[in-house]
Structures are given as C-alpha cells and as structure tokens.
Image 1 (cartoon, rainbow, N blue to C red):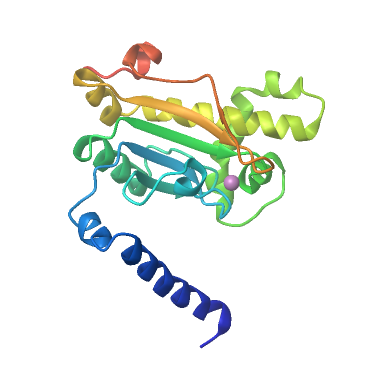
Image 2: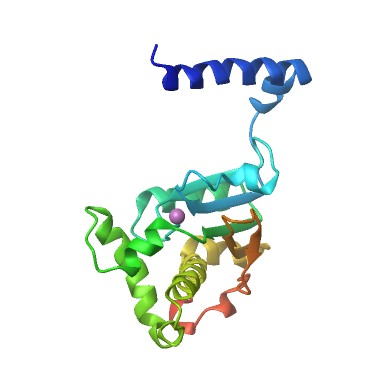
Length: 210
Ligand code: CO
C-alpha cells in the first residue's frame, strides 16, 4: 500500500482502539444519535478543523465547509445542511468562521482567473464592491485583505439571517448567528461584532411574512 495512503488506515485503527480503550461504550453511545448545539459554516482549508480549534468532540458540531465560507441561497447543499440543522437538530448557534490567510479571499481580491472557482468567488467580489469605500481607505494591501475576510463573514451571517429557515426558527425559539475569523498565526478566534438573533436585525425588505 502506498505509504501516505496507508497512514490514514493505520491512523484510523489506532484511533478506534484508543477510543475503545478510554471508554468501551464510546462508539455505542455515539451511534445512538447526535444532538449538536452548533452549526459550523467554515472554509474548506485543511488548517481550520471545526472540532480541533474549538476543543470540541465528535457529535458536538454539525459542519458544512466550502471555499471561503460563503452562504449562497441557491446552493442546495448548504441550504439542506442549514434546514436540517435548524429544523430537525434544533441547533442553538450558527457560526460562520472565516480565517485570515484565506486563499479564496485572496483569489477573489485579485484579477486573475482560477477556473470554476471564479464564479463561486464572485460572491466575495460583490462583498468587496459593497464595501469598497471602507476597503480602499486601507492603504496596506494585507490589512485590506484581512478586512475583506472579516466583511465576507459578516455578509454571510447576514445571508443566513435573510433565509426563511432562520426567520421561521426565530418565531418560536432562540437562534443566534455568529461571525468569527480564525487567526492562522496564533490559533485564536476573533469574534466579530455581528450577532444576529431576530428578524429586526435585517432590513425590512428581507423579512418574510410567516
Ligand atoms: Co480559506
């Protein structure tokens, strides 16, 4: 077996043994079902694993990841995840987690083409365009990209608040949407000042009559 591939199978065997050694009932308990309180919408980047950076375990976070943590209303994959998490799992918090040093944000910032992902990253160019005055007032390019990373998260939090799924949940229970940016260089999460927890948080045009 090819070594880099075999490493994963071996790692899995060790993982299973260790878990069973620590708690013989571990897998039996997990297989009974999941009751996560959090939905994580993060970047596909291999360096930002939801459980690891939050010190949580299997079963605690329902996860969706895509390039540059974007929330698009016509994305059936993402919307299915959000609907299931909100309506069936009744999760209490949705977290949109971007990260500094995001290749997707950097690619969107540039004028180069990168293939199929160009149309996906167009969403971030729209974020840039919406906030270009603030962004272009930042002279340092790296700082400007960092701010675009933050604004992208804020816009994706807003996009979630605009969905019927979230607004329906707000009618009869508490559901908070948070925006975070993970710092690759120090492992710390920065909470952005952007918590949404009621329909009044978004402009009237986006509010549904439910
Ligand atoms: Co990224």
